[in-house]
Length: 498
Image 1 (cartoon, helix red, strand yellow):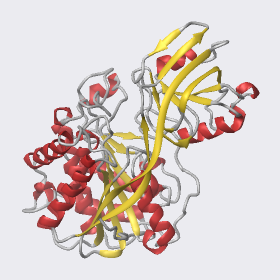
Image 2 (cartoon, helix red, strand yellow):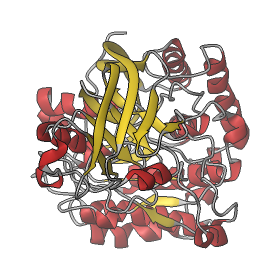
Image 3 (cartoon, rainbow, N blue to C red):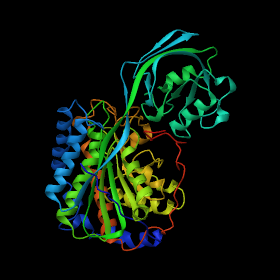
Image 4 (cartoon, rainbow, N blue to C red):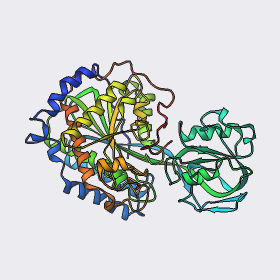
């Protein structure tokens, strides 16, 4: 498909005043959910079931997944565009972009040679992190970083020619790897202090082995004297093309556009029905309901389905970077971003991105979006908790360019604690999503209660933002951040890139 540049949105001005004006409209007895036709009234579980089953069938017919660069993802793109073109009058475009497609071509091995000979189990105890391109064997001593590996002083002089062992936290994985390489490390191992699962996240393309180990393995290896490891791996990387889907609703203010986004791709390991069929189909159902049920919005409305999120937020990053480089005036028109990623985890909690922790100048507006989600949940009688607003999903490129954002999330590979079990039910000491990034992430992995609560909450917020706003979120003088804003000092509910 030929990509069409799709852009548009921007700013607003007094969020606290807008909050006072909007809350009576959003949560009065005569709000949208009681109207004859509203987005909330159109959120139908049978429709969600049918469409999520459609995505699962696409995966099953295409090697079991819908990963970027595969036929399963292409069929997913065709599915979303086909539904939109059949049932709406939106301007639908497909935006192509290139990315580095990284693959392991053999099962890697990792052995401790001394002081205690041990064989580590691939996948459950260690994994190779995406972007690490290396072929062959490597045997070297292991040196533990003195800090979290985010700065050169964290690496001692004897790291040269050694494997650097670092703990997750405080900065992007790619930063840890680059600092270790600068210090002379020949390989890097990152311990996932947040989980008993090793990480498979992206570290950028590097030509040394980069592995991750589970929390317990990392704790066993830290500061062990005379520790020597031997690893063997073969991986490749090639440039591939994939796509974003963009749909612009007609009407609304072209200078103030709300982008509602969700990633459409799965990981190669499974069909990705919770991650992120749940967000993508919610996005699609809201788009369809808006087209059939409501009149022209006051705010410009754009729906987006991002590609290659699982490989490193590539689709949303390309979209924002393309605007920044080639259409900077259009980037300034993006008023806000709503992100829908993993909203039907089987052992769910109702998490809302913690906009209060955002930096200036987007803190007030991101907190305002958070407040709208909180009020929507509370009106349904549902509890909620904040989750890290650290740029680890597709809202990341937006907030890094000074665009306020908000969204929801039901939990991934981290285990639910007793306190959250007491609030949301389910099982303590069990993962929010035990099928996270695995082949069992099919419709049987979807919690329909979480799916519909979050779908209705999002519908309420989106309708209110689109139909009630008539002024701007923030000033036109938007801060563009040259370096990433957010670092994962609190890993409790985070995911993906750090």
